[in-house]
Length: 119
Image (cartoon, rainbow, N blue to C red; front, side, top):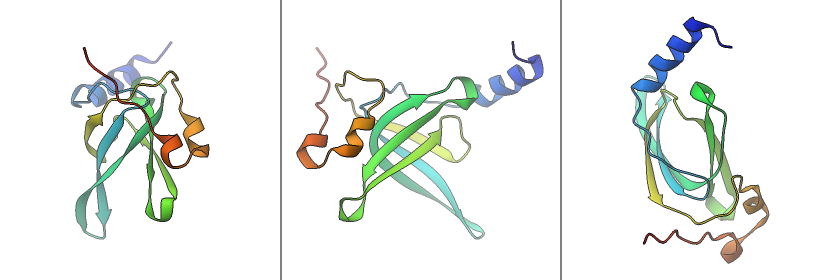
């Protein structure tokens, strides 16, 4: 049972956002606002969504990409964060799990995800 004030605050946070439908296994491009000193810029973070957890305004998703020198970089984003400018689904993946933490142990071709074929 949630407090009605908290519910109304959460509803206000959620309603202004335009978030695409995506799942674990999808490749997403997240445009994040970064503040450096008094300047602000937008930086894209593109990778595979390996998990989605939580509910309401506390919902988060984890994106994993391969950085320089084949070092895996994971970032956890709050779904309704003010710092997220946009989320774009680049490609849909065909996976059989809700959490893809096994990708952390895979390298190269073993870490690939098949693309979901639409009929």
